[in-house]
Length: 149
Image (cartoon, rainbow, N blue to C red; front, side):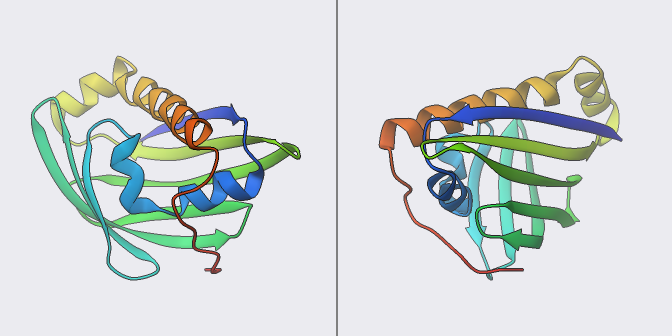
């Protein structure tokens, strides 16, 4: 099991950053390798990813969600085993630190080698940078879900 921890500062208010992160179906716009996400219930998402020609599908459940603070998840079925949390930290009225922490369990020899070479960590860092570019270029979220889990 590998533990990943990355963060990024974004030039938007905490509510804007949090609201955008709750729009799971928009993740393919800034997460490389994510082809499609379907929000099946308020707490269940179905993911389709493709990395290095390997297509995977899995379900993830939101285990905790507190508006403007955190979104935690764990996979519950499929080809990927991980659990994590994204937290949102108000730096000032117009800036937020987004922190991603997750445990990733590589599946098979190719995943294990890629993990040892730091591919998962670099992917997480790149995805956060693309999130930053996405939300800052818009200046506002594409939607929101303010419920608690």
